[in-house]
Image (cartoon, rainbow, N blue to C red):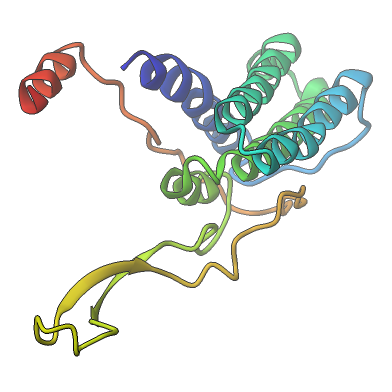
Amino acid sequence: MTRNNSELVAGWGNLVNRTATMIAKSFGEIPAAYTLEEIDEEVLAAVRAGFDTVGGLLGRHRLRAATAEAMRVVGEVNKYITATEPFKMKDESQRERLSTVLHVTAQCVSDCNTLLAPFLPHAANKVHLAPGGEGEFVPMPRIEQVDELDPDNGAGLLSYPVITGDYSATPARESRPVTVGAKIEKPTPIFTKLDPSIIEEELARIG
């Protein structure tokens, strides 16, 4: 419950939601980037460095460390929004800067979604749609009914369900430029906060 509420809802989900909300309110579509400042370059570099770091950890089967590193990168993007304060850029003279900051943030959200896709594949498809993405980002599994490979086992012909899928379209761990002009609607929350009562319910269910 704590991991869900503090990391997914308050961390990653909040970043996705407020990014899409700010863009929808100010532009209605992913805006263009103008002159990048040092802080913009730094957050973009930090997120892109995550591809090698997270990928290296996954390659060594260090799943917990890989998840922690991906969430650390999400934290860097949240810090970027706090530091740049795009929500305070309301004057027309700040329009280009606002456009740049929100473009950078949208790019970071897109890249973070790629980082987190191996751990949160279902949510990755929802996040993909929030900042203007289209279609399915991560291939989903399907259940198929199959027949026993060895029907001469004395038990007769057996049929049972298996989980399978075509994962050839799984996205590579790399940055993909966001599409300037992609329409963005006011989002709905990706993750739901869990009430403490869920703990008692789950303990009762498994106890």
